[in-house]
Image (tube, rainbow, N blue to C red; front, side, top):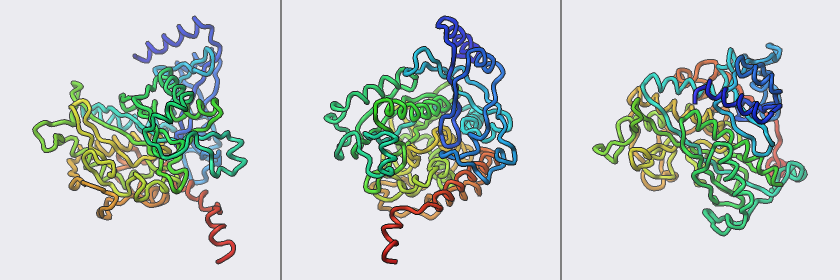
Amino acid sequence: MSRREAVDEIKTLLDSRGVRHVKVGVFDVDGVLNGKYMARDKFLSALEGGFGFCDVVLGWDVDDQLYDNTTVTGWHKGYGDAPVRLLPETWRELPFEDNTLFVLGEFSGEHEAICPRAALRRVLARAEEAGLSALAACEYEFLVVEETAASLAGKHFRAPTPHGSGNFGYSVLRNSVNTGFYHGLLDLSDSMGFPLEGLHEETGPGALEAAIRVDGALAAADKGALFKTFTKVLAQRSGLMASFMAKWESGMPGQGGHVHLSLSGPDGAPLFRDEAAADGISDMMRHAIGGLQRLAPALTAMVAPTVNSYRRLVPGYWAPTAASWGIDNRTVAIRAIMGSAKSQRVEFRIPGADANPYLAVAAVLGAALWGIENRIEPAPAATGNAYLQTFPDSLQLPRTLTEAAGRLRASAEARDLFGDTFVDHFAATREWEERQFLRHVSDWELKRYFEII
């Protein structure tokens, strides 16, 4: 659907239903949806000419604390309005709000350089220049607990009560008991335009995994971001809470946010399968894997963006610690999934559920394109349990968020793919995030040191 067709469709709906307000929203660097209700006439004007949104949403963290180390926005700029263009083709009906439409926007002007959706668009433009189109899909592991914001705060966010018990991955028993939330999520996903290909129990109490249907890379990122937001909305409206933290409890597996990617040519023909090649992997797919492997350490901050992300990236918990690759191997970082020409793809398993979908897809696509452009050969594929194998220092992932931010800042490839302004801004926000953590005294430290040290 063209932009003009989408605008006409929205106007018809507003007129026929007598809609008085529309909800609009933009995603920030952390993947948090910021928005507001807009009166009908104001919305129609914004559809044509955009509107201003306070740029503080690109200048504060998830706790609304203001960054002190960024340049595009900050006290020195006075937190003025940043221009936002509305994206009429993203319109959806809101299932919980009678007769209300929702439309996504993205930052433009000076702020486009640090807008996460725009970062992905820049990489997609690079693919288009090479005659390539990208299909992608996001899948998320997440936690559902029988808590409210008040009850969790009352117990200091410790020992939440999961919605289910026991380590019953793929359990039909559990998903046949807790059907209210599950069917609600399936229905929500269909009605809001991010349908799920699968929803099942993961290992661990209250743990679920959802696979969102494949789409063009930009639409796939939109769907991933909206899925995370409105899963939380549904849960809270159901007296529950959903969490996409990378690691919520030290003894349980972490929560991944894997990205699947494949590429096609100008005629739409898939390019990752070659029946005549070894293992059926085309040169393009092999070079894409090489790019992902080579750039993964430098781009880790974009797919593991919180202090908590690095609690997940530890040995033995179904998450990689090095940029390994293998064929249909879930112990590696880059899994080559074999199949027909249409279904063959790579799965990038480093991202946690906490990653911003736009930046996760941008990082995966950008690294793959760089590998293709430079004909990067991957190291030999890992077989067996990659968690028990040793990989070169060049393939080791950063161990902390500050290290990851430094690797991103120093990467010439990242700057070429995403732009200097984006890299400097995003690295600064991640350095800020770890500084906030270092100011905090944890219960682990109190228990370990208070009496005995």
